[in-house]
Image (tube, rainbow, N blue to C red; front, side, top):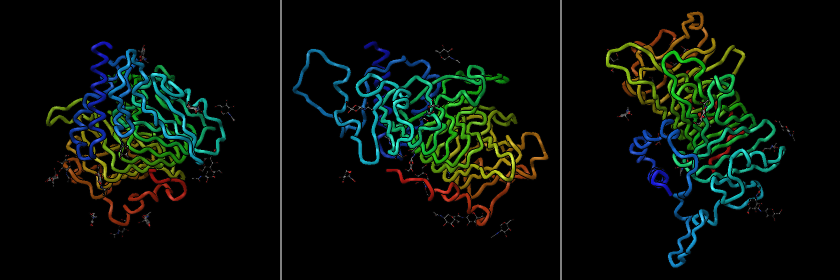
Length: 392
Ligand SMILES: *[C@@H]1O[C@H](CO)[C@@H](O)[C@H](O)[C@H]1NC(C)=O
Ligand SMILES: *[C@@H]1O[C@H](CO)[C@@H](O)[C@H](O)[C@H]1NC(C)=O
Ligand SMILES: *[C@@H]1O[C@H](CO)[C@@H](O)[C@H](O)[C@H]1NC(C)=O
Ligand SMILES: *[C@@H]1O[C@H](CO)[C@@H](O)[C@H](O)[C@H]1NC(C)=O
Ligand SMILES: *[C@@H]1O[C@H](CO)[C@@H](O)[C@H](O)[C@H]1NC(C)=O
Ligand SMILES: *[C@@H]1O[C@H](CO)[C@@H](O)[C@H](O)[C@H]1NC(C)=O
Ligand SMILES: *[C@@H]1O[C@H](CO)[C@@H](O)[C@H](O)[C@H]1NC(C)=O
Ligand SMILES: *[C@@H]1O[C@H](CO)[C@@H](O)[C@H](O)[C@H]1NC(C)=O
Ligand SMILES: *[C@@H]1O[C@H](CO)[C@@H](O)[C@H](O)[C@H]1NC(C)=O
Ligand SMILES: *[C@@H]1O[C@H](CO)[C@@H](O)[C@H](O)[C@H]1NC(C)=O
Ligand SMILES: *[C@@H]1O[C@H](CO)[C@@H](O)[C@H](O)[C@H]1NC(C)=O
Ligand SMILES: *[C@@H]1O[C@H](CO)[C@@H](O)[C@H](O)[C@H]1NC(C)=O
């Protein structure tokens, strides 16, 4: 092992340890994520040789067995992944070849279309450098990672290289009933400089209905999370980007998520805007889409808006969300098209923090009362009773 590789392994061990301790080490944990930026990833070697499992209870220790030749799979937990059940088939992915597949796409390819069981694709710790596509006819797939700081699918297409932002996703999901747990989706294309053209770089595009994400990470800069269409649920997720980094025309509920802007720091007093959290794409009142955020945090760097009106009926509500002072006082933007002021629906409800002061908000931004806010406060917003299963 080269020193660089050891270094990377230790890095993952540290991150994994942090990830497995209780949620309120989150502060410390997020500080460590400063290392976990696209730059870090692009400087990592392409193969991470030793998977380090933080599932210590899965680990077998045999201190007496001193083998002369050590195989890379010796540390592979023998009870990993769990066996099939009556309702799930389990496929295993490990970048070192210690189980069924070495790439996530190979596992997806092996899933039969119209499989009546849920297929759990169990992905071991590591960075999977590949572009992944889940086609429309492969519904009911789960990507199960080992923690969003230790398991990641990473690619680096841009709008330029993929012939359009919509095709730049490192992962693209077209199938319904997709689930992801404890895994990150990253696009490590270079962060666009001011005025860059075609540098949008999506980490994941979610175009299937009824998708759920628990404990996932979404890392990129411009256009990180393409929340394209359908009804989607995000809980305990970490979402990083700069411009329009949660965008699309889906109807989505974001609960307990940490939203981090990586827009360039702005000098105190400067009035420049260099980032936007959302660009929701509802085009007409007949569409039934919108983004609802509840109990989230917004922090990071830059001077940014909460949303801008990509299309005329753009609909976004933030509730019980702690916003740092990176939010510009006007809060929102109508895409410089005042005709949209009558049709966009931008609301805030019981938010806190320096960025949540609504005194100088744009005139069309609404401070919602209890009645107005109620449709946006629970998972009924996404018809959860029709499809959303509990975490386990
Ligand atoms: C799984 O299916 C088998 C055969 O149909 C049945 O005997 C068994 O009880 C089922 N197990 C569970 C947990 O439902
Ligand atoms: C994965 O590997 C296990 C253990 O070798 C095997 O039982 C199972 O059939 C394999 N699954 C697939 C989809 O290849
Ligand atoms: C699933 O879709 C792919 C294209 O995305 C197609 O090639 C394949 O034949 C389809 N399979 C079934 C069983 O419909
Ligand atoms: C997906 O799962 C749902 C319910 O769990 C089932 O009704 C549906 O047939 C499955 N779809 C496919 C294509 O297997
Ligand atoms: C996996 O995600 C769940 C749900 O968000 C979270 O409670 C748990 O701590 C995560 N586990 C790891 C190992 O990241
Ligand atoms: C992605 O990264 C690879 C390896 O560094 C590089 O060769 C390729 O040009 C990059 N692609 C884009 C679109 O930047
Ligand atoms: C709000 O989110 C935090 C994590 O960011 C979580 O610890 C807390 O339990 C959540 N509160 C509610 C009421 O869900
Ligand atoms: C939320 O804010 C509204 C009006 O600003 C207030 O009437 C209500 O009591 C608050 N609700 C909670 C749960 O804090
Ligand atoms: C908002 O978050 C900041 C930074 O984590 C924290 O210091 C502050 O107490 C929070 N405010 C509220 C009202 O929760
Ligand atoms: C909100 O902003 C206004 C205008 O800048 C300011 O006068 C007011 O003191 C602020 N309120 C709080 C609670 O900080
Ligand atoms: C909330 O606002 C709506 C629209 O402005 C208004 O019709 C309604 O009476 C208000 N409800 C409460 C409880 O203040
Ligand atoms: C969600 O909120 C609505 C409106 O307040 C309420 O009617 C409904 O019962 C709530 N649903 C759940 C699942 O809590």
